[in-house]
Image (cartoon, rainbow, N blue to C red; front, top):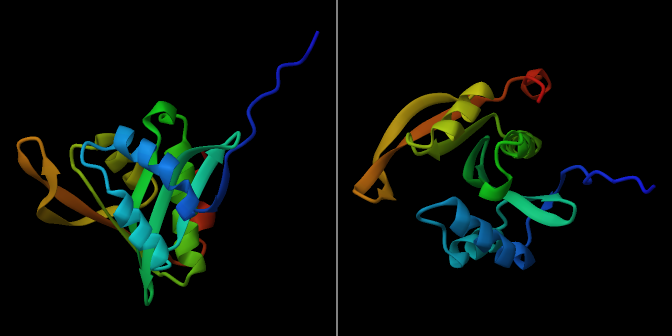
Length: 165
């Protein structure tokens, strides 16, 4: 009898331009108004830190940050819809927050659609708070949708005290 091997654990590495075919396939599945390949290329060429999340050698998610002075902004975070609801988004979010901290950020910002209730709940559960709204920020089927602006302050040991998965 042969043993069935379980998939390798998730791994993270720097996002590269060579990942963009896989990124675009996920982006189109994940968002009704996806970023263009050119936006990703511009971010990577500008040196924005990004992470690729893989499982068993397959890209499952990605995230990009911009960092200026002591603030970071999560520009894009996405887990393939085919792989959601398994804790992968939480894992990737924590990794992006850690990456921001490693680059000297004291706070991290992001925008999210209010209609994306699972993402809003995830961000709240990880310590992000709503600090404002950007009216008509996102394109939507019926015109435009506001963005919730959320932020987390990174004080000593925040990363270590986040709840376990």
